[in-house]
Image (cartoon, rainbow, N blue to C red; front, side, top):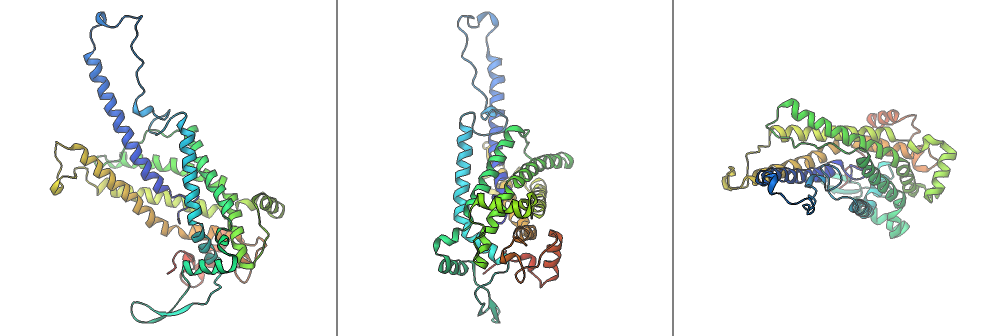
Length: 378
């Protein structure tokens, strides 16, 4: 959830894409080997079929199932697949929206309920702030259950636009066939593969982020209206008109730079850490056989287990790096609602920031943990 993608984490997409790409590559290699064997068995030209009875057209290889190399689904099924991803993304976004709504209110410093006295694991008395679910119950008491989905419409549009943008970019700029990194590669070769893959992912993420950010800003402002009980931003079209009238074109891109920096740091940090672990710590000779030793009768088990380990490594690294890049997400969200005419973006909740760097410095000099505000809650 914290990775956003806007809300969909790149490491999750990378893991699935890596597994799909590996399967397609294996099928292509098998098809090529079968083709060589078939040509070796062909009879001499004098015994071939008569020109009036041509042979059936050859079936396309596994590598061209999507009209380009390394993909899944082709031609007519491509729009269906893209629509499926949009629908699945919309479902996940709707289910997770209440938690993200509570998270944003905590980020802007809105704590309507007093802390409760309790004891920690060491037996000391401490004050506990309300949990996510306690906060959600409070929102239901004030706005009803429908209140938990304030700002959902622009967020759904933002995620759908991001998904469609990434799909369109893959068609216009199809990725080259990415080879599987192995610990048998030398340092320069394996690093070159990771740099090439990460650069492509970074290009798609940055473009989709920039196009979807105006809707993200509208969604943030719709949600923080809960603090001052305002109704300034009620719909997508009316919000676009108000932002353009009051702040101009730049008003749609406030907080974009920290979000972009967070995405870039996340992608490179996640991919490079996963690369060094996969290339130098994951042994391709490990198989599923008892004792952990490979055998010649089941060579595919070695490949499948090494691939599974690599996909999980990238997933775990994604979670770890997302915790380090959270301050970028926090600063970007605070800048999106700062000085926009809403109570949550004005004193005493928040000073008026001149830039995102000013916001970062303000949070850094405050009490320890302000740059992690909204990330953890019991």
